[in-house]
Length: 255
Image (cartoon, rainbow, N blue to C red; front, side):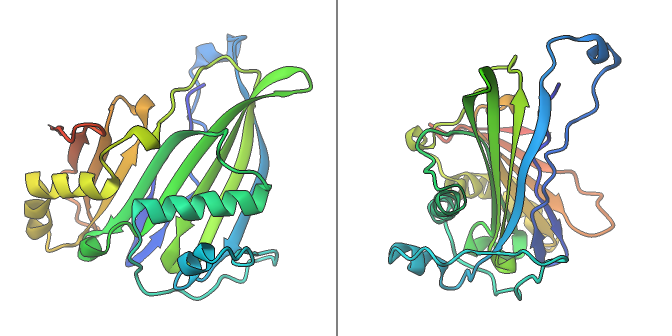
């Protein structure tokens, strides 16, 4: 069974981070494959935040900054203006909501994937949305299992969506990302992409585009994968890819 795809999609000027970890279709041969991992959804929740004050409140040690949306349909908070957060800021938010929701730190969890989104017109502000996927191997009823927790942070919408699911039994061993040892942040990766074709791409489409920067060891790239995508119905422009090494900053263009 393949992993769920990890993708961030932009609609108009609003940043929408979609929970798109859906299992890809299995080959017919998989039906007869005994070594199959079965997925079970455990938790799906949406929390409201105030992105204009969230970081300051977290720095002050406040914990009453996340409000679970329980109504059906949810009463979403109003949108905010674009924010100026860094990769480190978004990871701080991820750590804090994880501690709040699960009463557990991320110390024993491994990073599977990370992805950041920003519209080209707001490139000077940095990432305007993020998704983090963490995993951990545990024992459930005496059997090995893999727990996955996913956080989708959309500051302009003042929401954080979290989900949790498990795979059991475990047959695959996943690779992980050690963010502490990496020297190239998402800001660095986008800057490198900008200097090596990104600026020209944005000029050609009049800044009507979006940028997604992701890290996923299992996607075939060792470093950052930065994608420039033209917005609108007429998407004749090809995507702009840069494979940027997370340690050295060396890059390779990929078409």
